[in-house]
Image (tube, rainbow, N blue to C red; front, side):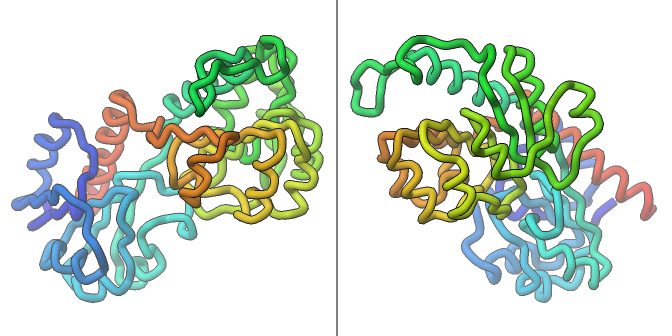
Length: 304
């Protein structure tokens, strides 16, 4: 059992999970707002031996240096790599601090968002940003059937989007760090990135936070009359070539401002950003809570 556990910001656990959490610490403090800087984070942690945080704060060495009692950090958000994590994992490892994170808890909602927006675009459902009736992307309503869809990053969410597109009859290809035998078995073609961009009408960027693959040359390969979805937590592109590309006859869909980048794009007629994290559903909170508690239980069992 921890002596003191501090959630330095809201971590989106369900009420049953918050009740379960009481079994794992003698004292629990949960802050209702987001800390402003490293010193505020350090003040909140104090003499705690366990820390929880979500994706909205960054726990740096500058804060951890002031908190010598910390032995466990639980990320109540995705942990894909040290480079993309919002915790300084390298420093934590030097200190002997265990850092855990979770994966694959909100992907279902993201897939539903992608399918919903793509269908609206192809069929011309709803209204334009200026309030005028929307028109079908190709002038006449279309199905996803036969659509050429390219996936950039075939991790869990990228794989689920690929499966959804295939279910509706799209021709799926992908780019990843390496070819995936399981994808080949499903009939998905592996392509170099620039070939993927040029050959497909709809592209889905499903990359880790702070991973940028779309530069000037990539947007040149992408060309005009294309639809680009970014389902990551940060832009998958360099800003200036994206700015020029989106001025063409193209569309970009993101769920959050974090995925879009500069707020100036929010008013662009070819940018559609709902400004809602589509992975934050009722079911996602259930999965998140279960995985956060499982990480804590596993740590305590190993260190009993």
